Length: 350
Ligand code: NAP
Ligand code: GDD
Image (tube, rainbow, N blue to C red; front, side, top):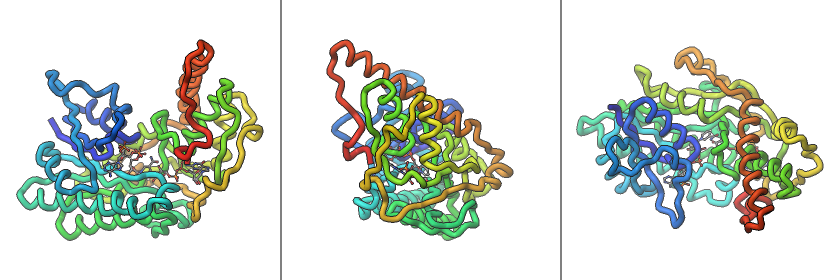
């Protein structure tokens, strides 16, 4: 059985990747941050007690800001493949927490690569996936491919660029198998609620159910190449099955503005979003990546990868999921239960 270690396993991508690898027969180890509340909700459907026979998913406390702890997990997990997905992944938040973002995203990657380098020096080789981002292109002219020069526009993006180059350097300097995936935005019903797609689908379905009236947003003109997260984790895995390490753009090749996302999502809710959406300057970024559009021809031809879910299918999937949540909330409220109101105007909706 192959063994994988995933940092960031509790996130959107980590949970999809864990499912994908378990279905392929892997033993999967994941790194979980200690929190005062449970943060493993996305793994609930695949987690079983490690005492049960046949358990193949194992979680370890860790943090990529703690190199010594990470090395101990590496020794325990003994992985063939390591997927570094851990990140402070919110671009707007990275302007408020720039140093922390750099510590996790850039130096966190370096700590992992150093551990892998030492591990390789004693004859244990691992294939590493490094989670790069289309944000690294920032202001670069679209369409963006592996040969497009980076032009990061946020502390998050600059940190991802540093992590990208650490990965390239460790590949060239020490012969490590480290592949950079340069993934364009990918979403799902598991997307964090502070990212624009999920913020929109949560709010519009709540508005449809009479649970809220307004949705406050920032830049509606930004364009993103949005795909489905479930499709993208397969590309991560394919990168590590290649004969040699490389850098890969993963994208749909279609870009839509936030406004267009609103049009389609509101269409599924039978709403006119213009009656509900208001602009709030706090959601604008000091510098923005205006237009991201990926050219994934290399991944298509060499990995044989292609997205399965269309933009329209993605929006519909998210709306249907969030409508169920809103209906549950509506039913509880109507029955007199107090439901904690989530969403509008709370800082976490950045
Ligand atoms: P996400 O939902 O925000 O998940 C991030 C994960 O990293 C969570 O498990 C989080 O733990 C963990 N994490 C944060 N800080 C950490 C630390 N100091 N030590 C260890 N773990 C830490 O992000 P995602 O959407 O799944 O994205 C996965 C990776 O791909 C990230 O590196 C992201 O930057 C990158 N990426 C994402 C996209 C996208 O569109 N989704 C596109 C390109 C690249 P908690 O659950 O405890 O917070
Ligand atoms: N989050 C958020 N909230 N974004 C908003 C809002 C709002 O209220 N209003 C408009 N936007 C715009 C942002 O300015 C941005 O242009 C776009 O919506 C998408 O924002 P996010 O969903 O926060 O994603 P992102 O593109 O900044 O970053 C995501 O994708 C990257 C890949 O390109 C994250 O997942 C990153 O971790 C990832 O690397």
